[in-house]
Length: 97
Image (cartoon, rainbow, N blue to C red; front, side):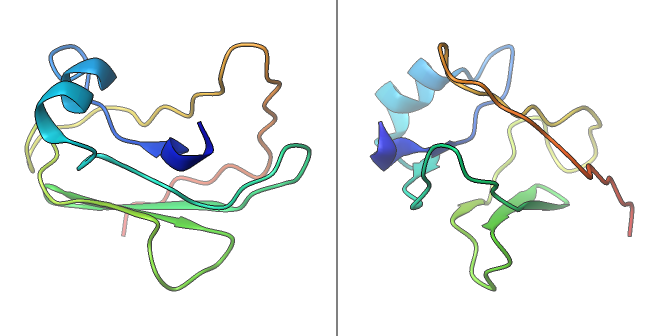
């Protein structure tokens, strides 16, 4: 599970299992994370491209070049924590630059 700790999916048509079956890991990546530690997350979305950064690193741990709802759509970003795991969020900021 640690090897696929970052994943992109886009409901309702592009769920995790579809990407896993059709895209051979293109929408998931590995990043070193441990239980019981705070992780700083930054998500940049520009047009149809998204980048996920962790813990202030300058290189993204996941890049999605083709967001499935397109460059002109709007919507939300979900942060998901696996069943049986507690997740806490603090200092959440959403900026439109």
